[in-house]
Image (cartoon, rainbow, N blue to C red; front, side, top):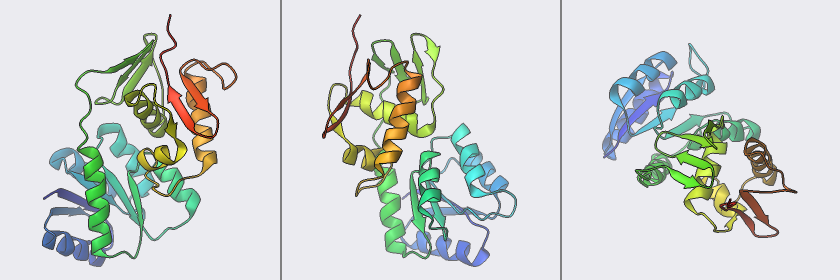
Length: 227
């Protein structure tokens, strides 16, 4: 049983989700506005959040940013908006999954199980250290040679995943599934852009890599550059 917070402005949809989740069974709670949803995230500490985008007081994307500033709770966006650019942007901004309305209760339950399964992979109790890199997966912070790195949520996720698989070549398909939650492969452009910006923040380039090394036709790996 999981504590599921539903942030949805439509009372009919909200009630249907509460009933469906209660029968699965989960322990649902709900909010009809963004600010009430944020309060419940802080007060109730749910296991997962279902977030609609069309909220009366604030767009759901803005609420997602506010949630990510205070919590690592898994967030599944539920919306009728199906534009691929919007979906990718929200996943890059910290959403764990995106479900387009209408959807069945079985599909919703499968998505909830998937994000909770990923969340159950416990973060290491000590930071990951690779050369001058220090990555605190629990606190979602990273530093390079003692200086804090300012990373987007997906840049951090990409760096942390590669650090957890130090020295291993990880394919784009695996990263699409594990970092972008796109099990059938994501956009090469999305991956390339994030890798480019992550390299810049690590003070390296594709031509002169230190930490991030690409293996043509295979994937990318994180290595200790040594002294």
